[in-house]
Image 1 (cartoon, rainbow, N blue to C red):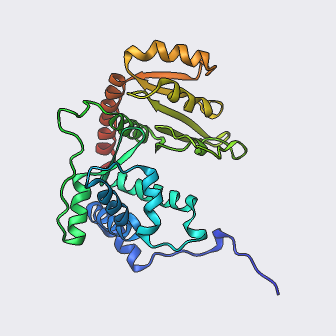
Image 2: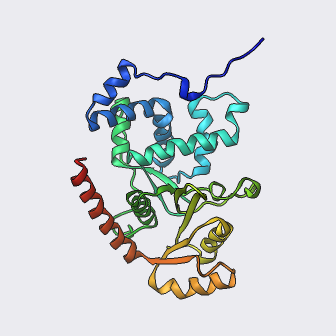
Image 3: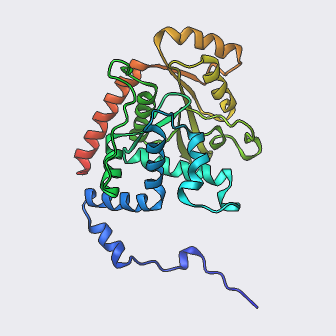
Length: 284
């Protein structure tokens, strides 16, 4: 028995009628279609899980979502319901929920909650009355929260041309032979860009707001050898403490870059102006 191999370049591709129809859609109509497919492919169950957990005031952590995912989507025990698979499924749906603005992430450890748009999607697709779950009163809300800073960093990275990652695992940056196997740490954000000669270049980022400075720096230290720069966003008053601790932890001074929260706000405003100019020039 013999097999012939056809390289990808030799395989003819053509759009189906459905594919052509998608290209002819307006942007809003196309996004609605993508959302419908995402909801059918597990996003709806992800949103329901968050609501079921938070409606009585309980915190919806990533760990709780991972542990309850199988029951929600009806996976059978075995290979395809391993902890690894559940985690990957959660991460995919989490990414979709963020992209469509249906869920928000709060604090550290991260907990999840539905946005008004997420509740509206649940109401639309079930016909049931999903009440808004109060998270904090207006007086309790931070002016510029930890989650707000991360969202701004993700947006800044996207505008300037990086592949922005929200709360990535350190294992995304570490080479295969150095992957963490126990208690894998997560960063607040990371920017990635590809260089044709050196491959992926990473800029890991930690937001120092309300947590432990030592913990934030230790997470950066894990990937310091493989990060082009190591960024910490912090309050002005914490800068000297961060510099001193990073020196004690032997984090390379030439790699460490510090931004204040005010600087990130200003950069966000500036990059939004660039994005607006780009859209005008390209007619987007």
